[in-house]
Amino acid sequence: MEFGFGQDDEDFRAEARGWLAAHARGDTGRRAWERTLGAAGWIGLGWGQDGYGNRRATLTQQVVWAEEYARSGAPPRSGHIGENLLAPTLLAHGTDEQKARFLPPIAAGAELWCQGYSEPGAGSDLAGVRTAAVREPDGRTHRVTGQKIWTSLAREADWCFVLARTEPGSVRHHGLTFLLVPMDQPGRIEVRPIRQMTGTSDFNEVFFDGAHAEHVVGGEGDGWRVAMSLLGFERGVSTLAQQIGFAEELGAVVRAAVESGAVHDPVVRERLVRQWAELRTMRWNALRTLGGSGDAGAPSVAKLLWAGWHQRLGELAVLVRGAAAGVGPADWSASAPYELDAAQHLFLFSRADTIYGGSDQIQRTIIAERVLGLPREPKGAV
Figure 1 (cartoon, one colour):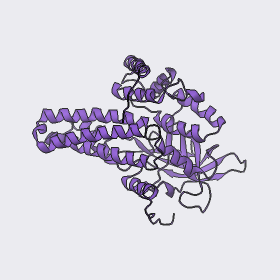
Figure 2: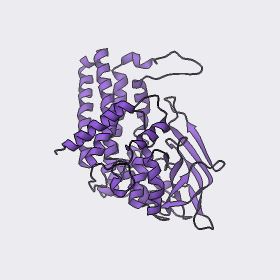
Figure 3: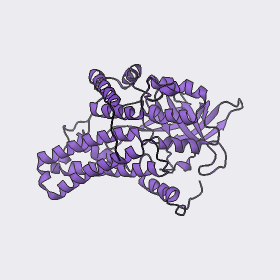
């Protein structure tokens, strides 16, 4: 397929690149950085036609911004869950009141979100939700009780969108509701960080003990449809930006292979070329589905492609380093038991790529059942 950028897109690229060069600093606090992005109109690109975003931008210009951001080395985003997942879901399923309440603060970088999907007993099986929500007598509020796990950015988030079971006795994808829950509820919500083998705590456990939620998206009992719609937004523009980061990581691995001499091994060279070719293939696949292909299996195919690719890159990153990959960049101390360099962090963190966001097994089941029409996998009682 042919995909190119016009002059308007290149002008937009120049503006984005210039602004990032002038403002992106590694020492900027994450919340302050989100507000800086919002004030300059870089959050919510493309929402302009709906009256909620900061500026109008075509789909290709959204790709340009995502690519330039990834290339710039700007600080990691804290607002991407609200911007890239919740906001499109509200535009598709929210009421006018919900859009007016939640979209402007997201566009301004003023409110951060986390995602309350995964649970300890359900693994990647989203339909196995046990967290319950009971409607209060006032008819407006739900009380949410249960536990979510692997919740990114929960310690920083102001709000959490939660998939909860509102119909007692319901099973699987029936009786679920998509709720918007404020996180500042002392005694009703507790967040516990999960320490990873990388030494960081990107994920958290979240415990709800009668937490109140006044906002239902898509109607009570229709949470499965809304949740599936949200998962579909994880591809497209965000996937293309992710691939820019992947290309930077691949470049670092190639340079390490040259420096260590591993590039002279024909097996290593073949693996490096294969990683490059597969990354190009992923880019064209993402461009093919950018405007929405109508393919029910597209999100699952994309997840399978990039998760396995990134995990293999992590393995290659330590392989080309040889024995040196087993030694950290700093001496051990009681306050800092170990420190990782970029290659070691890539190797360890990428082990999770085939698990979070729906494991590879779940993605293959979705493709088998929803695309190929194969018999459904037997499910136990929930």
